[in-house]
Image (cartoon, rainbow over all chains, first blue to last red; front, top):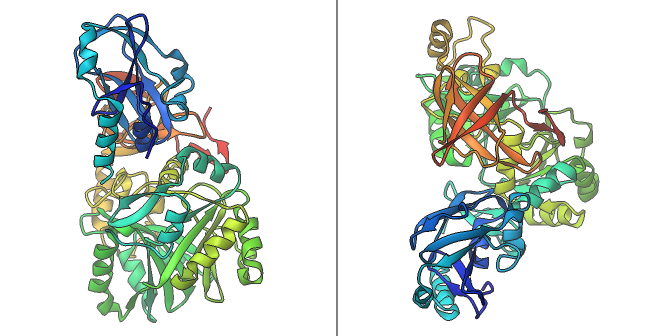
Length: 131
Length: 360
């Protein structure tokens, strides 16, 4: 069973979301997702300033194996991307919840965070998939 | 549950991620595909390739049989143990399979065919065998381990000791029997090494002996990036029953001489060659960031084509591919990746050989 930090929120499509103290959120893919995908070789991030709808595909993570879409967990505006991934996409594998973060958003509605999965619910999704 | 090789339990014990490959439960990697790739380029790695099918062809007319069924000419093999790579074609000139055949003695050739094509290959061989009085003997009880990399042969020798027999003296692309082992200096990585056939009940012991020499287990994932860097085709992706060797970068494997040798598919190949081969398989290196993947569209001055195999090349740190595009001189092209057209340079494969980059 891979690591599912209790303080984060999650989606069924394996994104994690961290609510920052300034009201923004940081988004990445979960440890389980990076394990499924394998060694990352390329990450395409959404442009800063782009407005995303919830569930909209907005980024791509490519492993040696395949390209995989990343979806916006909630609606909002992209306010930053993890530029370190351009040269070191393997950070997504090594530290998926830390240095391997993908992008930051300003949520359209802070309350939307409540609609995301908590750690227990996400762990159940992963457990379900493993069967 | 799929078919399992005699090494399945060993893979699981080593933490392999198991996937389905042509009906077989095979290791895709044991942790990191990229590290396994580098291991083979820099030192030595081993692959379980027991899913591949070994077929012995026996009979005094085996040579005539194979000269009729294969586009390459086994009559070129005169030294026992030597091998050739060939396509086996259907009447339309399409590729039923690509394979290696070893000449062991005048009435014994040993063939290694792909796992995904084994049933149709065997059926095809058996259909034609009676006319030549050839016995088609599928070696179900053999496992096969490929040991590949600059240090592979030395480490295999250390693992096998005396059991290595005459293998250290093998020239490239040749094989020798050593007791119950069949050791070939062949591979699918662009590195030196051996492919060792071993009785199924001794496979795990050989695997463990290699492991003890620090030969690292490598999965099918690394096998694919290694072969693509080496510019080697993969059946089902780069060629199939609807493509001829001439449009698949395999013209070099077709033996046109002697002119009077009749082989299955020859009339179609001659016709295609005479009329002008419409397509070609080329190598691409992506200039921009991104990853080339099979089925992406390729745009050249001569028209549209398609990537047949694409990947991120761990050795080069950029993406490479094989692509089938219209015939004609082409030095650069564009590839559609998720709606964006990215620039790719055309190069002659291989991309990497014996640990060294072959491109600028």
